[in-house]
Length: 318
Image 1 (cartoon, one colour):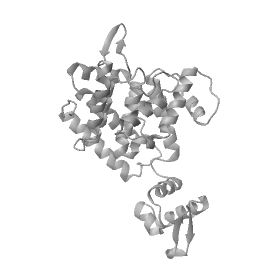
Image 2 (cartoon, one colour):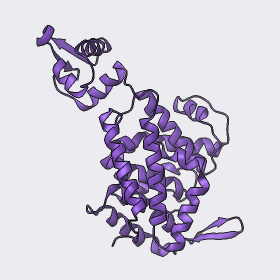
Image 3 (tube, helix red, strand yellow):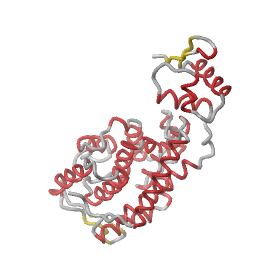
Image 4 (tube, helix red, strand yellow):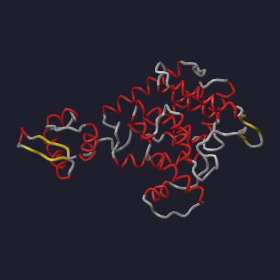
C-alpha cells in the first residue's frame, strides 16, 4: 500500500528541475566528483547530519578523526563521529531495500550510544518541542509491521525514486522505529535510496543545507504530521536536493584536471583502450591534451602502454 501524498504542481516542477540538474552533472562528468571533493563532501555530510542532532565537533575535528588523529571533545560526540565514519565509508555494502540492512546500519551508527542499537524500540516514544509533545509515535507493537510495509513500498518499481526517497524519510521519522538515531537514519537511508539510481548522491551533502535551516526541516515534518500525508515534506526535501545539486554544478573546480579525468575514466573503463576511446568520453579536449593525460596515467601507474603513436593501446594494471 502506497503511503499517502499528492503530486502538486510545485512538486512536479521540482522533479523536472532535479532531473535536469542530474543530466547536467552527468554531462560535466561530475557524477564521480574528484577524490578531494568526495572527501570534503563526506565530512560535510557527517558533520551536518550529526550537528542536527547536537554533535559539537567541527569539520576540522572530523577530518582529524578520519586521519586517525587524536581529538579533544566530548566522548559521546567522538563516538558518534567514529560510528558515522564507519557507515558512510561503507555505503555500498548496505541494501536500501532490505530491512535487515537497515537494522545493521543502525547497529553500527548507534554502537555504544544506546543499549538497543540495531533493534526496533519496545516502548512508546514522544518527541518534545519545549514542554509540548510535538509528535507521539505509533505504539511499539506496531513498529515491525509498519516498517515491513514501508520497505514493501520501497520495492514498488512504479514509483519515482526521487519521490520514494522523500516518502521513506518522512514515514520512517513518523514511525520513529528506534529509541534514538531516527533522524540520522532517515537522512542516511534517503541517501542510499537515491544512490541506487543516481550514484552521485553518495557525495552530495544535502544534510548541510538542512542543518543551516533546521527549523524548516522540522516544520516540514510537523506540517506533514498535521495534514496526515508526506506532501509538505516531499516538497521540502526536493527543494533541498535541488539546491544541493545546484551547489555541485556551481563548484569552482568543475573544470576537471587531468588527474580527475584519469580517475574518472579508470572507474568507468576496465579494458584496453586507445586515445580515441579516451576522447570519446572527454569530447571537449584536444588530441594533445589527451596525449598528455595518457602519459600522466602511465607515469601514475594506472595503466601501461603498448605500441606507438596512433597504434598505441593502453591497458589497466590488475
